[in-house]
Every structure is written in C-alpha cells, then in structure tokens.
Image 1 (cartoon, rainbow, N blue to C red):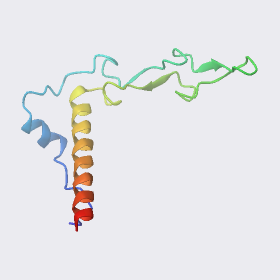
Image 2 (tube, rainbow, N blue to C red):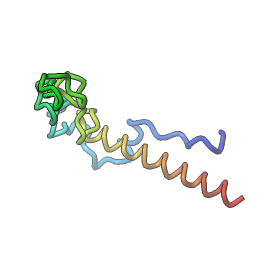
Image 3 (cartoon, rainbow, N blue to C red):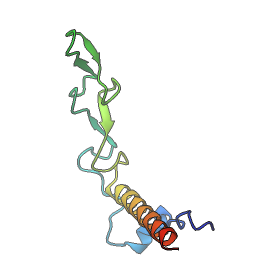
Image 4 (cartoon, helix red, strand yellow):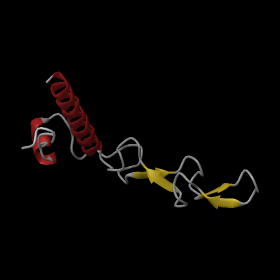
Length: 106
C-alpha cells in the first residue's frame, strides 16, 4: 500500500454491522427516500427569468430539470447511506492530513 493512499474504508455492510444503532431502512424525511427535491431556485419549474432581458431561461442550479440532489441525504434517499458517506469522507480527509503532517515532519 502506498502511504499517500488512504487506507481502505469498510464496506457499507461492514460499517452498518459495526454501528447497530443506525437504522438502515430509515428513509430521508426531506426527500421521502427519492434522493431528489424540488429546486429551491426555480421552485420546480426548471426555468428562471433572465434579469437582463426578462425572458425565461433554464435554471442554472438544476439545469432545467426542476429537481436537485437532496442535501440532507446527499442524494442517496437514506440517512444511513448519507452518514456512511460523510464518515468515509471525514476519515479520508483525516488520513490525508496525517500524511501531510508526517511528510512535513520528515
């Protein structure tokens, strides 16, 4: 294993087993388990008014779809999946910080 590579993260199943208090089936309450919500900018229409000319144009935030990834569950539709992903990202960031400190101190 290259020291600059983060250690392998436990699989989602292993992580769930190690955290029995987390309910796997808990749907995200914000998106009802869909992973997407109505775009806040265009209110689900997919279009916004151009401030310069007054014509409608595609919303930049949702690319004209009227929907965006749910921020509560990171678009996964499940709180447990979102928590796993946050944990994975945090552990990777801590590893990279550790490698930087080790490299600098040498």
